[in-house]
Image 1 (tube, rainbow, N blue to C red):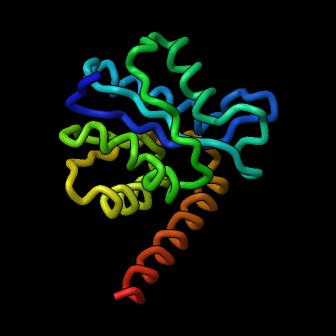
Image 2 (cartoon, helix red, strand yellow):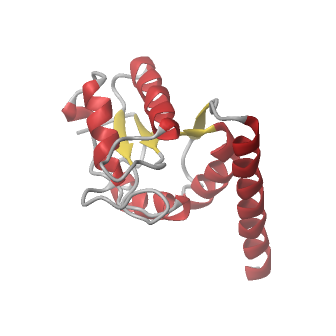
Length: 167
């Protein structure tokens, strides 16, 4: 497969039966919109296992791929799932797959509250690439969204502090 771009769909929770929860479904909607704009792009689902997002016997990316197949993205568009357990691994474990497509733009699909950290990590891992963050607006109650945003702000600050201490 040759592709001018790859849509990287970042993982988020599913339930114990593999049903995608609201944030994952929102990201699937955003990935589908990106694919409709760029049907020649490949799709790379991410997400393996973790107590905080997937405890089934299949990787989270499998469920994302099934949802996107059901929404009309052809099987031929998919790259192998990145079996990651967090956003850092989303970027680092995607490297061997994405290195097979060195000229491809990356469109990273995530949620609005997660966009800055995802951008930081993917730009750090792929400084040679053109990266676009495609963030969907999250539909959650304000208090829950505020907690997620606070978590993201702290996580991004930790990452930036780690980078400056390594220099």
